[in-house]
Amino acid sequence: MLEIKNLHARVNPEEGEAKAILKGVDLTVPAGEVHAIMGPNGCGKSTLSYVLAGHEGYEVTDGSVSFLGEEMGELEPEERAAKGLFLSFQYPVEIPGVPTLTFLKEAANAQLKARGEGEISAPEFMKFARENAAKLGISSEMLKRPVNVGFSGGEKKRMEIFQAMMLSPKFLILDETDSGLDIDALRVVADGVNALRSPERGMLVITHYQRLLEYLKPDVVHVMADGRIVKTGGPELALELEAEGYEKFTGAAA
Amino acid sequence: MGVAPQLSAFEAALAASLPAGELRAALETAGLPHRRIEAWKWSDLRAALAKAPARAGMLSVNASRKADEITTLDRQPDLLMPRLAAGLSEGCPVYALKDGESLSLDFEGSEGASHHIAAVNVPAGVSATLHERYRVVAGGFANIALRIVLGEGATLTRIVEQDASPNGVLVVTTGIDLSPRAKLHQTTLGFGAKLARLETHITHAGEGAQLVLGGSYLVASGLHLDQTGIVRHTGTNGATRELFKGAAAKGGRGVFQGKIHVEQAAQKTDAQMNHRGLLLGDGAEIYAKPELEIYADDVVCAHGNALGAVDDEALFYMRQRGLSEARARAVLTRSFLAEPLDAIEDETVREALLARLDAALEAVS
Image 1: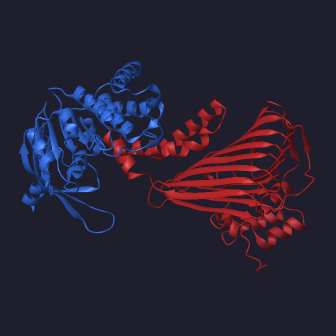
Image 2: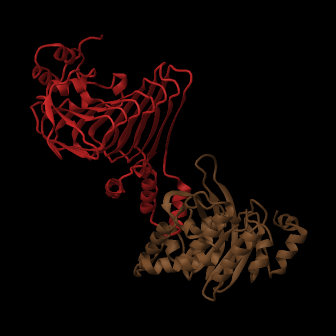
Image 3: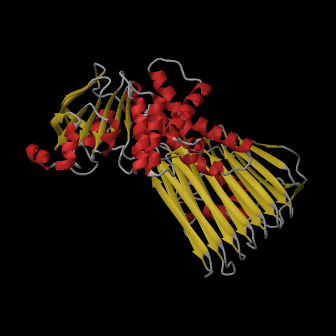
């Protein structure tokens, strides 16, 4: 479903020199599978999620990404979104003055339009919103508030999963969705993510800790260090990392 | 006093249309306001009118009702532009508002130069609305002066709409007196002109009087909107809240000059002024000059001013959810600009102004 080959990317800051961050990532996530990427801070995990989503601050210098058999190349972020790629942000952005449901309805319709499908009706959308909000314990009052404004870290992450449910993407990237969550919030978010698992949907879960993976039970765990995948294994790899730390991998990558 | 300027053909004709006297001499000596005058440094009226046709123009004033009387002002304005408006108008219509009344004044200037003055009185204890709308077409110049007096405990909601007038020049100078315990809530929605200046001078008597002054502006390419506001607190316990938010597209120019002046007698004044500007592209211009001038020692006064661009991370976030870049920009700009308009209490008026803002945003993006 998602195929990343020899991906090299660098960040082009407004000031200062470009810096290579991804240095040859190879990764394949078939439909129906959940893959985790673990790695120390600064290894390139979050950069990978931004590059996959088409962030303009990063430049792909080599390699390729294909999604559903189609090269992502230079596609705009909104084109990738319309193809079914959803990124749950590590730091969801606040958008004052724009009510959450208004925003999501517009996003959903923009994606439908880009795919040549008809718009979703308002009653249908509201019904779907109520169902999904109930699954995540989100109140109708929260949905009326502007996107992410005044929400706690945990609430923002819950809203990210809510947005994913509303947009029904084909592929989810969860960037450090567990950061800033206490154990109860973590469980709610993980239940939401598990509800999104399906044979047609792939997921890439980026995390620093093993904690989230206890709930999500990934099919495959990758270890990333210095801009590459340095080891791939089963769920036991996450436990190994938790017990022994990242040092032996960062050492191996040096 | 410097060397007498070379008057433009427009200024010379304007001077010639005035009777000999102080006003004519003032115009002949100094000419129209221009960029070397501090208060007009970002709005060069002289340059904007240098090639304008000097003949008398047409100004249609559509009022929702007849004036109560036509009179002459008991006191001439101090500033040149309203003085010209007074000097070149035939009498001054006066509207005395009744409780619960909503008066609308719709001004349209067309080809040629026109001058007009009007007065609105809100008697003590009366609560009313004044809704003005300004546009100038066909290369015209409209110079309008308004005099508004709020009596004790009077409440006025003033809405000012200034339509995009790419071929026109507009100067509106409003002098407002706020009596003790009076309340004024003024909101402007402006889109600029070849040059437009909305200048407001408010004398704030305090004693529980409250002023809420706000506005949104959006200037497209080739348009210029200057909002200059001076609030003078003269009595104790006055409150002022100002919030102006504006956006300029590439080639558009916004100007905000705000001053709060607190006289020594105006102890316990509580005044805040904020201006936020959004630059929508390279070559967009917003100039801001917020000033506090305080002579009383027991006051709470603050001002803030910030200029920036649309937040890239917010743009990326919205695009990741499927909105086009143009649409994401428009949504962010709209939510930024809507804040001063959201404070309008009357839902119908608020929605109408927001709809105008949306239409203008659509045209800009």
